[in-house]
Image 1 (tube, protein in one colour):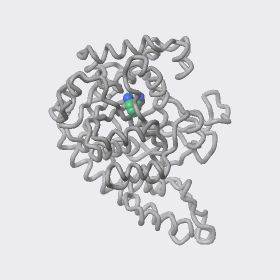
Image 2 (spheres, helix red, strand yellow; image 1 turned 60 degrees about the horizontal axis):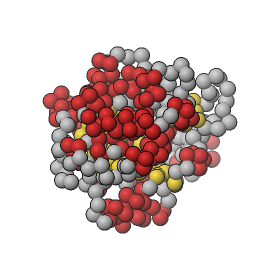
Image 3 (tube, helix red, strand yellow; image 1 turned 180 degrees about the vertical axis):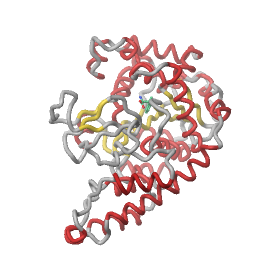
Length: 409
Ligand code: TRP
């Protein structure tokens, strides 16, 4: 089962149909063992990352002179590795860069896919740093039943949806299929990583088996390479010592645990990480989300009417079964998908908190929450679709041309 940044497939049962006792979270599969979804506190302990606590949030505020993004404040970006070091570097006026990516698995993109890019854009502007975006069309070719040509065409279509948010003078978007063949330095870093990880280690980290094709087994070296500034000599003036910060969904952590382990052995700084939780499907945290199921999410191409119909019809409600019951017992925001979506998209903290209180007390009905969400998403998509229309292949080419960005090193 393939999955993408910011959103994973959530299942209650394992591949063999049994109910797992522990959450399963890896780049290809996310199984929640409980109906309330993944237990993120447990994941932090198991993965050995650090929680984003109030002390780190204050360091953010001090370093930036502005409050951290609401996704950080609300615990949607909930875990990190070495973020304090990045903040310290920034305070000393030292450079770092951002790296994120997307596996273009189809032309369709939904709301879950834009979250990481909204957040990354905020980081990029707040810190004023370069951003590289890896489009892993090779990964999708290896894991899915699609041709190289199809995978490459998804890269272009997906990149068009990113463009409205990003500035070309600070951003390099690249297709693995195009860039790796033309970049000796990128390939050298891949080779260094490939030599530093054994098949046994890769099996341990990623669960590969003897029957996986060898392309999959060496793919982690490709996702690791952009963590090193020397993979982009045109941007970093051939320096190999510029540290990297990777915002990603927590399911991508295995790639970067491996990268961090290898980095010192190949003479590069370890990348720092910011981890986000998963974006729920309309049907609730415990159901499976799929880009091929039009009803499991709101898509970036949906019409205002489709948004309204989908949310009214499918968004799982945490409200009471009857109005009477709801008024008596109140609604449950933890499982109410409309409320959960508002947490991801409504930037007004006070408004959100008021909605939470009034829904929990039973004063507000589910219909109100849905109406609020529908209006918010319709406005978001209207603006997105207008900007997206203006993005031609030419514009995408501009972002994807290897070049120096506006930063000097
Ligand atoms: N493997 C990711 C996916 O399937 C894509 C990806 C590549 C990525 N590099 C990344 C995601 C860095 C986050 C950060 O979507």
